[in-house]
Image (tube, rainbow, N blue to C red; front, side, top):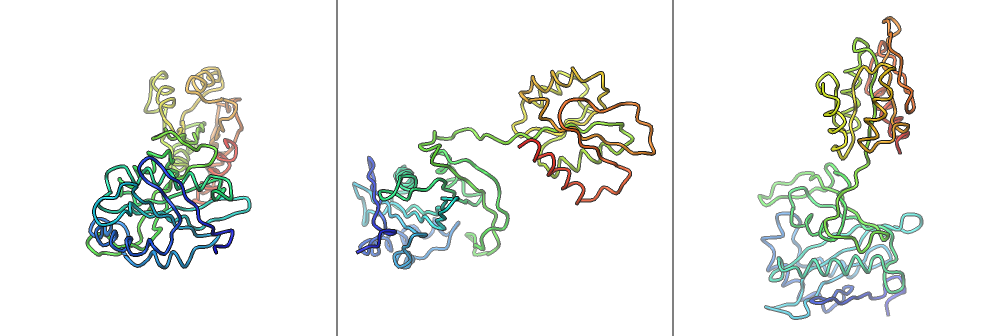
Length: 328
């Protein structure tokens, strides 16, 4: 008899059913993996015997689901396997999924249906499901089929985890492989397929005399914040400047020497780009030894930078953190 935290879970769709692993899955699973070895080896270690270990590891923090075809073809009915691991409770209520699909069912849409059922069970309240709030998955950047399956279920790409797992490629060369992070929450589920990403927009103005080291500050902030530079020195046309900002999904660092008289112009441009002017931090570059006839704009929060002091990585990071804190 299974303990309450590892009782069996299952769901049925139009072409597949999913259920937590049982002893009778082990033999057909071994055959399914062997049949798919060449295709799987490009991205993950291939081990036909790992399902037995997953069966023994079933617990409150590790659940394994097997996807079965309702109309089997060939020698087995195993469409795929989905591990729901690192289940965290408390204030997190999160888990990570890892998965494989198997031949001869790969490429027919059956595994995507099964993966949707598993994610649905992850979000279903206990005892019929796992009662989680968030599910995440990590995929190597080149594995477009896997990432496409996640996006078809409405997962968002949230970032890049550098050197995440020690894996070999199809040549047998091993290395620490980067992974793209994807996630979806119970509040979003069921999520629309290929939903557009909603990026956090970061917009800041770097203002002040050009002789005060303004460009140095701008480039450093652009690198640290991960957003492009829109410089008035390069984008001469005002209409183009604000249009480029409006079209940037991540925002921008706007570099200029805006005089106080330009305040209404800047406010209008920001608002046309969908940005609340009072929330835009203004970095004012100044060097005490230089005459600075201009004064900062009176818009959002003002961050003064003394560019006569050494501009260190620590100073760049501190300024970028202040900007993010203001915006978010």
